[in-house]
Length: 143
Image (cartoon, rainbow, N blue to C red; front, side):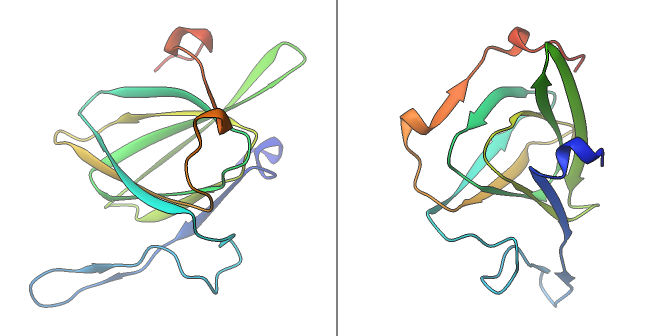
């Protein structure tokens, strides 16, 4: 990961525990250093090829987990009129959590042939005035 992104992003490999009848997929524990509190958890379905972008949280720390499918996340920092990008792909095959601190633009795209499932464990409850949004074409990135 490029040094410019280290203030905003961390990636944690997660455990998959194989059990009879189906696996247990770990997500987040309050004893981990990336845990900053609990506000809410929600799931977002991402259809194959669908792009959901761009969002910028002013206060919320996100913990993004993809237990089903595969999703490409793109993070963008804009400085001095330039855009810098960091791509991270996670899913069932590379089971990890991306912790995203406030202050960075991001979007994501479903890469799987089936619907992917994204879970976010956020440290605060969603507030409409806490998040900024841009249209897909407002940040130039070749999806």
